[in-house]
Image 1 (cartoon, one colour):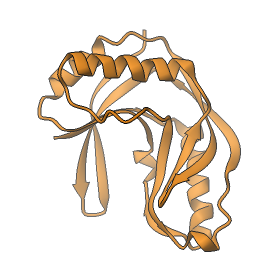
Image 2: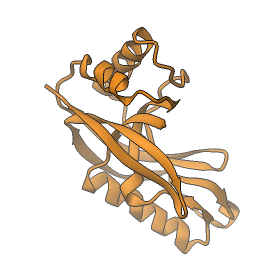
Image 3: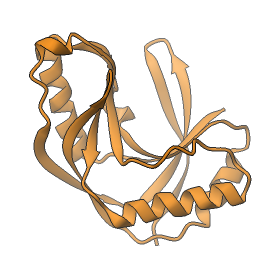
Image 4: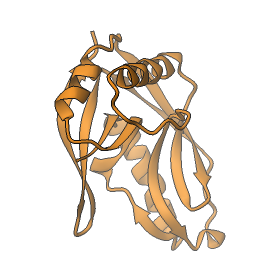
Length: 169
């Protein structure tokens, strides 16, 4: 099972990112665009791991209060485009505590430094013809919980299925 822990996007930031994708498409930028229902903030990528109950148990040990996040800029790593989030101590603390619980439970996860972002385009082609926006109108949302997600490859791309949810306190 290919697993990750994330915060799904609410309507306002998802709509904002969908608008950016639309702008890219209008400028003939090709690539693998993330479907709106797949937009999320990854807190920890676990990868292949066959015990989702252990992951949910680790997630449930993380205590956090509801907080809000704001999507406020666009960036890229080579051919991967993402929407960035404003600096947020509560989000950073949540990711740090979650990763600590995973490590204590001996659950493997990608140890790359956490960078709050939402990937919306992979393998972008024809970017030289595009006037890629970097600044966008900020969109905020409440974070009331975190989701354990299963990632499977479908005929038209990745399919994400929620396996569990842990609510903020």
